[in-house]
Image (cartoon, rainbow, N blue to C red; front, side, top):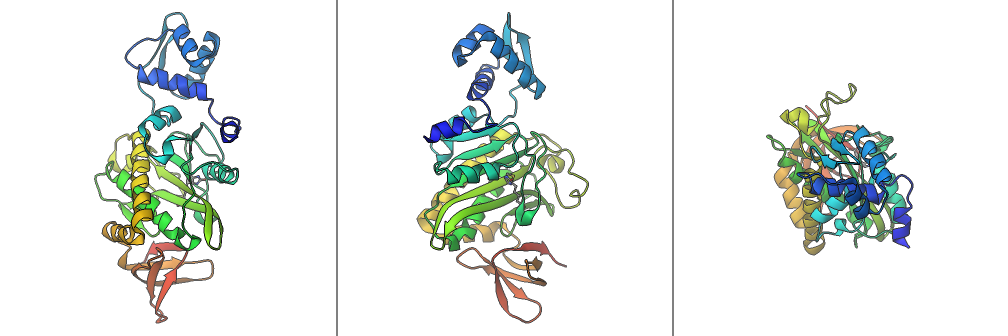
Length: 338
Ligand code: BTN
C-alpha cells in the first residue's frame, strides 16, 4: 500500500520527529514536560531527549531538559510536513508530504514515487541535497537549510506536447510567491528561471514519464535560493539569493506555502481555461516574452536572435539574426545577448 511505501522510504524524517517539532512549535510560549511530549507522540522520555539533542545538533534552539520540560526558543524555519500540511489544507499538496533532512535529490525521490503509483500532489522537501540536479545535466547547489529544495509529483491530464506550459505554470507560481519577498520585480527567463537584478535565484527542473499522447506523471523540481549569504564562487556573478538581494532573512516555510498555493491556482486555471491566461500572464511579467535580444544554445547549435512571443504550446519563438526566420525553441539555454 502507498502509505507503507512512504513511511518505509529510507531517509524520510521519522513522523514522530515531525510531531515533536510541531508540538514544540505550536506551544512555543510554554514549557512542556518530557512526559507529556512522550505521551503525545508515543515514545519514551529517553527517546524524546535523544531527538531533542538531534534537533539541537541541527540548529533548533530548544531550552530545558527531561525533568523540567522543554520549550523552543524560536520557531525553526524547517519545512516540517505536519505544519506544511495544515497550511496547505484544501490543495492537493496537503495529503502526502515527505521530508528529508538530507537526500541526494528530491527530484530523484519524486520520480521513483511517480513510478510506484503515489498520487497527484505528492510533495518531497529536503533541508539539504547532496546531488541536486539542474537542467542540462548541471548540478544545483543545495546548502543546508538555506534554500527551498522541493519536488512536486503531478499527474496532469494533458499530452506531452503541452508540457512546456506546465513548466511555465510552475515558474509563474514561484515568481509570484517570491515577488512578495523582494523589493525589485523578479523577471522570468523562458521557460522558468527567476532572476532579480539579472541574477538567477530560482530554477525549475521538470521531468516526466510519458507516452506520445499522455503524461503518466511529471515532477516539477523547484530550487529557490532563500537565505544563502553568499553563493559559491563559480556562480557568484550569475546567481543570487533573496537574502543577498534584500539583506534580510526570509521564511522558507512561508515562501513554500505561498508558492504551492500559487501553483494550485495557476494549475487549476491552466486545466480549466487552457494556455491563454498562462501565456498572457507570462507576457505581463517576463521581459523575455517579446523583443528581447537573446543567445540560444541548444544541443546542436548556438545562435542569436530576438524573442517573438510564445506558441500556444508554451514554446518560445525567436527571430534568428541569420535570416532563417522565426524558429520555435523546444529546449535549450536562453541568455540575454547584447
Ligand atoms: C535549473 O535551473 O537548472 C533547475 C534547477 C532545479 C533544482 C531543483 S532543487 C529541487 C529539485 N531536486 C533536484 O535535484 N533538482 C530540483
